[in-house]
Length: 147
Image 1 (spheres, rainbow, N blue to C red):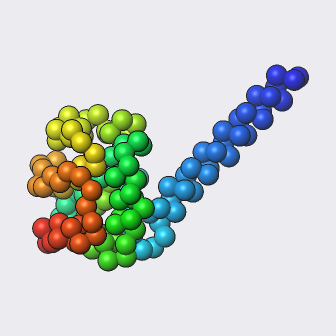
Image 2 (image 1 turned 120 degrees about the vertical axis):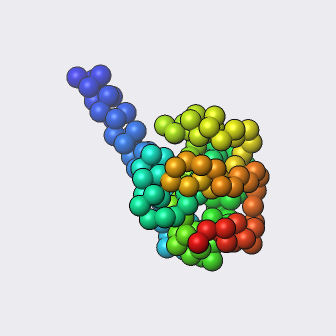
């Protein structure tokens, strides 16, 4: 009985923590101002890009990367950046070490530093690769490469 209560308490704690992390992640991207990152696979993004004619913007990052965290809380949250990227791209965030597509993306596009920003088409062909922290104005210039 005691073990069952402890197990249930641990399960409740895990579920609550997961919910908090999900809300934190959503608050960083779903506040209506910044870039909205889709929670779909790379294959799904490619299919959508082919259908819509948009490029795919991928923020390849890691959980321990300081500049990655700074971009997530800074330039990616700016309204003017969000407006441009949400209109012109299918936006993905891929953790190179934890996400299902992370290892593939890192190998396929020779990602060696973080953050790495990738712009690819619906066939997966690399259009542009940018390494390192980018300010909002830099991101806006990069957004001009799309239609």
